[in-house]
Length: 341
Image 1 (cartoon, rainbow, N blue to C red):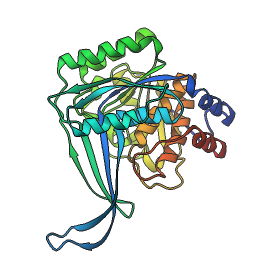
Image 2 (image 1 turned 180 degrees about the vertical axis):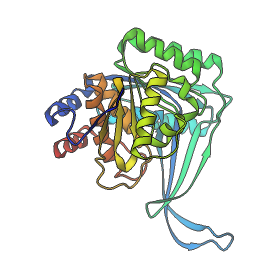
Image 3 (image 1 turned 90 degrees about the vertical axis):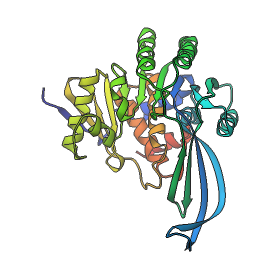
Image 4 (image 1 turned 135 degrees about the vertical axis):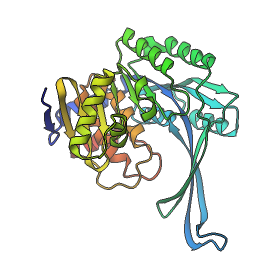
């Protein structure tokens, strides 16, 4: 069937309708499952090159810790006013303790971290970024990528099952650190289908075969074309990738994020829909995918169509890439962006 292409020059819904969904975000309850990451930022300035090696010397002015990976999706949902729960794995180490402390600082009546499990055989994933003059100089990671033991997968699934009655959406945030497995995805998809709630996946290329029959997944354009076995990032190639992935995996929809080109949504019967970027200026794309998936989850939880949800996610992404570091969007910022759109 020929592709039915439309361009999102106008929103899929009126600004009034989109604002109503945002105002209903507090009614949503989303469980985020996946790889928990501690983001460590070292901020400073450079005034000279090291005499020891041809590298810049960064004079450190500040350091900060932020929630990353699935924990940042959780954080984004809370920041947008929704209720959120978190399920994942940390190590029995200092980074794990610090990540729990960061989660604890966000504990309200609208959040739970009851599904966070300690694995004594792996380190907590920690990404350290050195930034000078708003530019990332280097990143260094501490992580384990081995597949989670079966006993821990079962503990996670028992926790998910215990929460299903309260949930409006499941989100899987896959950073390929070993938490998201084929067996886990099969069971999560089954549970979501039984409760008739959407399941959204932020994917990793090496795991695309795991995501069969999910409601929607949100790869970036490079992940999508690579997973589809295609080369290039032109419109035609991205369109082919979106249609192929949706058909191959049996997903209801595929939402491809495309940086400065916005987003492209692929739905049934070969239809595609393109949204131009809402970003005024791009400073940092770190965590933008987490903002997209968190906003989409809340939108679908409150009755938005896939196109309406994608429109709100596009607005939210346009806000967050204008900030440095892993950031979140508030309901007020999103409402203002919708009004200005």
